[in-house]
Image 1 (cartoon, rainbow, N blue to C red):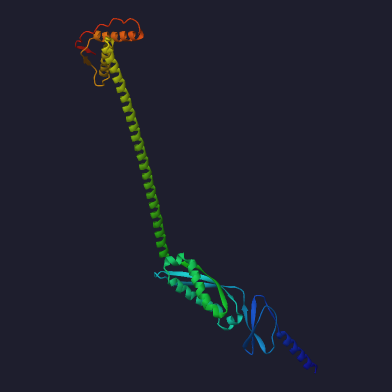
Image 2 (image 1 turned 180 degrees about the vertical axis):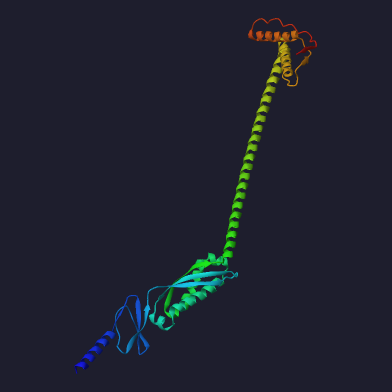
Length: 321
């Protein structure tokens, strides 16, 4: 009797122990009644019917990371590259994840690898290396839509590395080097062209300024000659008026001035060391004396007129060294 009571007590304890379930945070357990799915136990305290119900699958509801192993992929331009990645997914429906697909992680992994080959196979090598975000977006859209019936949510798919063959990498390096040298040569040529343009602009501006200077100088020279001509015309008119009044000193002044100017021009000639002139020293002195008489007459204006200077002798040919 006592043995039966002990057996009954032990059976009751085991029954209570099997009925009480403590589900940890981040997990959900499925409950199966007679081997068929019945309900899902959420984190915390739960009860089941002993001997009738049992725990089916213990599903992790936290976001999980799945590494995609490296694989060879042929691009659209027949380049073979090695590609690997990583998948972030989360179980949203424990029942579907437990009973809609067998071996959930393997299914997600194979689906991702297959779509990586599909997406990269539709791109050239340059596109696959430069459009990483576009590849990730396409993979995420396709894989998430395919895994939706499994009760999971694929949050992100990232391509970790794309490795072209070594010879292709060397060829790309040479191509980039050639492209950089080409850009450097273009910039150098543009710099030379700009320098030549600036130099030509400077020479043009200098020529314009020089021409303007010559024009201004010519204008000033012409103005000076015009004023000189006016002065000579005025002097000639005054001499003519003086002659008309019978003033012979004006004639002597005019002749002596031209005489001295002609002599000065002869003396300034750079190609003459010896001058043969048709003149006498006394004739020149007589002309100078005539000039002195004219100056004295101008200073004593208003008084008696001095006697006119003696006319110079006729010049004789002579030699001045």
